[in-house]
Image (cartoon, rainbow, N blue to C red; front, top):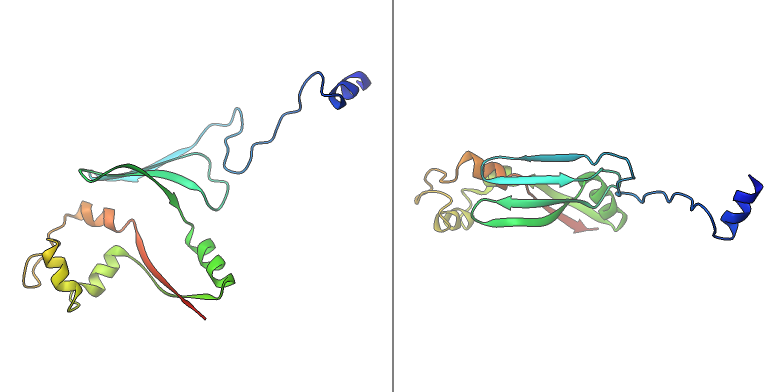
Length: 146
């Protein structure tokens, strides 16, 4: 036993196992995966969710975006950091709620018509439920310096 300890001190013999850093998968540990989406978008996440930040996923949007790497931002942790810098949250909504509150705005309403999001004359929505679900994956937010 004493010989092994002495050999380890001199850098000889068996190497001690190194502990995996946060976010790394330890040897022998099964890598967890999660995926959600629909027919037009997909967001697979690989890995074990240990640190509060750095959860990478690849966003895919049919006929528009090919596997672009993005990162999950845990909202409450992000908000707490912002508050540490005297930033007060003024606004936070998913895009589908932004659409509902802003679709008849005098500037944004006509813009949505020019972008073929809805029919002219404040008509019906021209995006599918699947497209709205993909848009709702994101949020709009605003902080104010106090």
